[in-house]
Amino acid sequence: MATLRQLEYLVAIVDEGSFTRAAESLNVTQPGLSQQFLALEREVGGPLLERLPRGVRLTLAGRSMLPHARAALAEAGRATISARRAAGVSTGELHLATLYSISSGVLPTVLGLWRRQHPGVRIRLFEHRHSDELAQAMAAGQADVAVGPLPENWEGTARHVGMEEFVVVTHAGDPVAATDYAPGVRLADLAEREWVHFTPDSGLSDILERACVAAGFRPRIAVRTEQAPSAISYAAAGLGPTMVPANALPPRFGGAVLRPDPPLRRRLTGYTRTAPDPVTASFLDALGEHAPLMPRQVARRLGLVDQSMRRAGMRRE
Image (cartoon, rainbow, N blue to C red; front, side, top):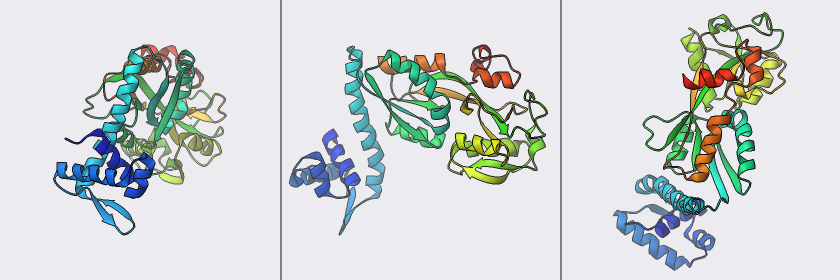
């Protein structure tokens, strides 16, 4: 059976691009590293790397093994951290993975409150563009906990956070917004508009595209951007409407905000690979309690009940 040391050598060789640099980074001798790596290849029954004149290249077997090696090393490191936390040592790092839109909209409030309760714990944040990318990173052991849509058939721990509501944003003088408190807009009424869209590798691009197709049209594109805050700024400047999570709007946003009719929502969860340790569990508690899925100022502009709506209805749909 492969040892953690051998898996560490595989990862180091791939990351450094050579046996020599891998040995230097791990502070071991190159013959010792090579010997252990050959033993790993014997264990799996074939070569994991192709030695090139300049560098190395993974074989099919190596490409198959590498993500599992990274996950095993990450999980081993977290096992030590988890044991320390269970013993009451609330120090170290919380590794947190999420989507860009959630990072800017949901997490600042939650992390600000949570870290005041855990000042000795640093936060290492991994941000991803798409929920599929986030799920793959978590499956590979990147973080202690992820915040985002729950992947299908996820076998680890998951805690429902609530429903994230999407809104249509446009400039203040847009005729589609008769008043600042317009209750909603049918996307079909915006079929002839040019939209502030998102880059194809952004998960927000998929959400906007599917919503428009469901309304009977493909959105024409005025400009593409990768992140929600930029899309909001472009929409407010008059480049076209866009669709973003309500929590991504700045507190004093000057443009028009409209609720799609029918409403568009996304279920958010906090999920882990294994049972959460006490520190991770406390973060999940804070996430469920304080996540601003529908900020009060946005709810008021939409003519909805204030933030109590989030707890009474939206979070439990």
